[in-house]
Image 1: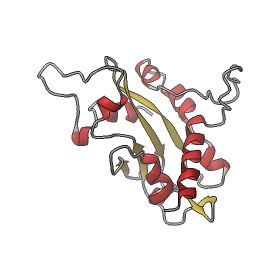
Image 2: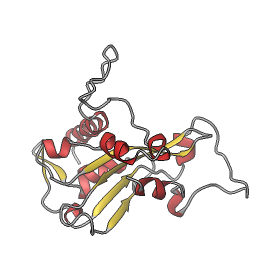
Image 3: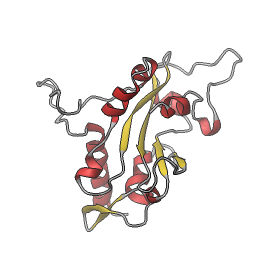
Length: 190
């Protein structure tokens, strides 16, 4: 892969995180535009503010560039309040029959990799053609919805403010592939 393509992916990934905010610290966020700060959805979900969480987490970038008409959402889900652990997700609904389409959970393939690389370089609705962001014709989003979840095998050490916390049985609160058991129920609320 060309280094230039990787830089473009990093720029696009940053754009996805910032949505349309300019990130300048001097100005207050404009109420009509997305807040450029990270969006932690767990407090909204805990307060049963599902519609507000859905609205705030909606990503318009793919529609703005005519990549897909499918809805996309992004933000952080808290997985451990004691350690301050949060996981980043990017969810794209299926282009066809989104309400009945199967749901796939995509996690990174190696330590330190973001799931956004898979979305941008492997199987998502967008790709780079001659340095230009374009619609990918062969994408898994045509027939299934996908949650791209940034999970590393060492996620607590990488994403926590303090040391790893064990549960009352001496184990860790992780499910299959190290994904905390609290993540699927939280994402299902969106």
